[in-house]
Image 1 (cartoon, rainbow, N blue to C red):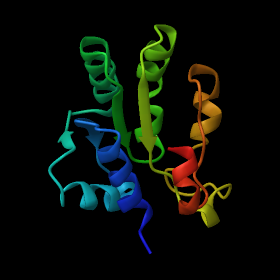
Image 2: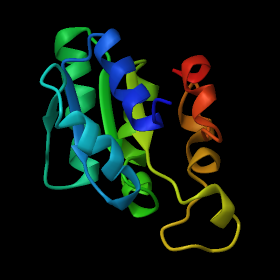
Image 3: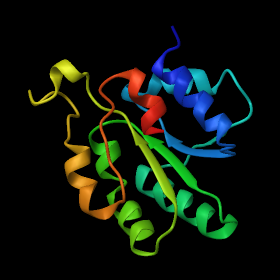
Length: 140
C-alpha cells in the first residue's frame, strides 16, 4: 500500500508543483524522504518557517501559480500564520502543509501539539486535519 508521504509527493507532481518551500521537522520527515527520491518538485529551504510562507506567497504573486509550503507541527505551523493571513487577505493562492502529532496523542498536550486548523480557520479558505491516508485523494 502506498504511504501518505508517497501519495502527497505524487499529488504534488501531478499538480505540476515546481517548488516546495519547506522547513523540515520530525513530523514531516517521511515526506522529505520521498521528495529526495525524485527531481520534479524542487525543495527550497529558507532559514525560518515565517520566511517560507512569505516566499511561497511571493512565488505565487510573481508567477500566477500556487505557492506551496510545508512545515513541521507545533511552532512550525504557528510560524506560518502571518504569511497565511497575508495571502488570504490578498487572494493569493497558497497551499500550506503542516505536520501534526500522531492522532492517538492529539488532545493530550503532546510535544509540539497545536490545533492548527483552529488557528487558521478564519484566515484561509480551507483547513483540515488528515485523519486517514485514504482521505488524501479527496482532500488534495
